[in-house]
Length: 207
Image 1 (cartoon, rainbow, N blue to C red):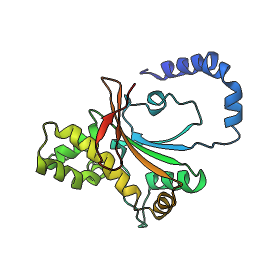
Image 2: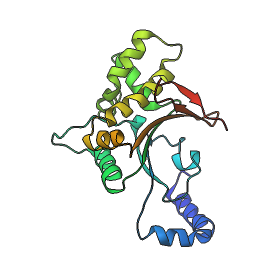
Image 3: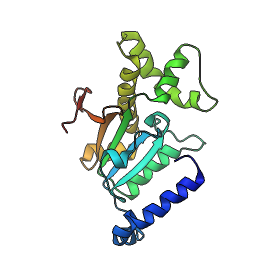
Image 4: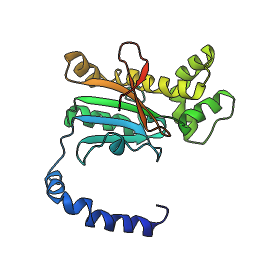
């Protein structure tokens, strides 16, 4: 879809198809939401969480941003969109799981690598992906056959680590009422990789 008219036609198809068959579900959702899972994913148009997890409306609370990043907890003045979403998901919706989902060919990760070569990208992108600086420097220090993929994995682990700096997240994780997970989606292959919570290594989820 590339034009507003195509978007409108997509809506009309939705009304004739999906909505027609799920109108009762949408009526129920109109009274409120109660998802068990929060997904923090990249804004990339090729990695759609609802499609990848075959989820129906109302099942996932989704936040998408450049490079699926979560900043560390802080209370300084400013606009904290991701932090606000995490707070709402954890304290109001009381989700039981938060999944950080990265993906192959991430432009935000590429921007982080470019910054390491003194080629920062974007007025707003460069400061945002600086959240990856520590992980990026470690990846480059050790040297990988594929620094892009290595940093995509490391970025997921970094966001999970940052989630634990939020007091209300840490409290619930330690109480056993909230679990944090990492995932990575290989777009061309349609493969989901899951992060082992102990080793931090990723492996393919059996289809």
